[in-house]
Image 1 (cartoon, rainbow, N blue to C red):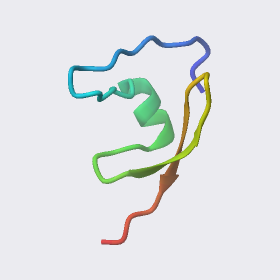
Image 2 (tube, one colour):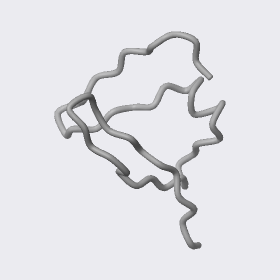
Image 3 (cartoon, helix red, strand yellow):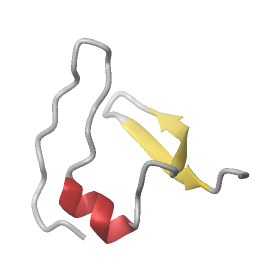
Image 4 (cartoon, rainbow, N blue to C red):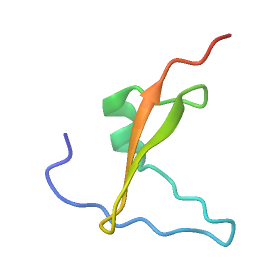
Length: 53
């Protein structure tokens, strides 16, 4: 896991980019799906899900 927090920023469409080193470490690619599992005052918790082909 990343040892230090990484700052990312939303673009004008509300999208954020997961940094490449984190994507590689977690095996995230363009076919990875996520659900927004939890929303709190501090942020979001995303969970990976397997998408059906």
